[in-house]
Length: 123
Image 1 (cartoon, rainbow, N blue to C red):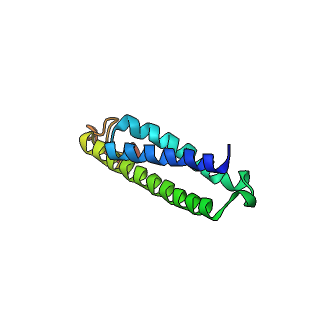
Image 2 (image 1 turned 30 degrees about the vertical axis):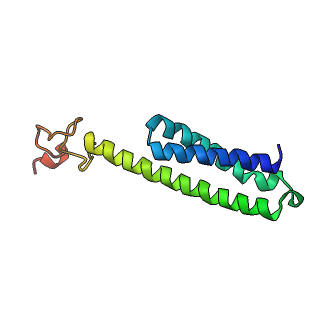
């Protein structure tokens, strides 16, 4: 595969991920995340795979632009992941582990004295 073909392939991934980000389809975003990761790995190997003679000024500029787009999409996917996680936590709150003692297995207040037995020792 030539450098131009590799850049064309990476450009197709960028367009596909962009369409998935716009649609906000959970399944599509999950697939896009994997493809974006694979594209970033392939992008990082371009310099090693192709020599200086293969890189024309036009292809260098195209690769630079693709690199910026890949990084931007990675950041957008990370932000969307955080938002989705926060929305899920709002719908299904997680039990915090504020105290070591005084709560039972399900996070409810303990029916007992609330302190470890060692603190109830008689003097």
